[in-house]
Image (tube, rainbow, N blue to C red):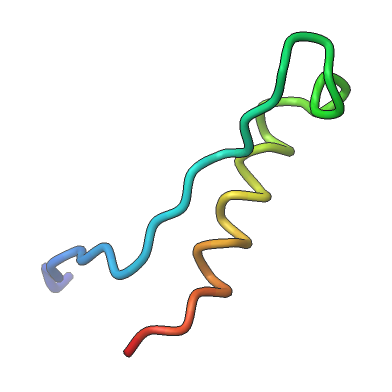
Amino acid sequence: MQDFDVVILAATRTPMGSFQGALANLTAPELGARAIAGAVAVELP
């Protein structure tokens, strides 16, 4: 097995909402999926 360095190329934050707001019905994995999708969609220079 070979060792590889892990490099973070992009990051996003999970959505922020108010208490019992529009994001209240989303689970933690669903919020995480949105953050991952946002990070993947970022175009790197």
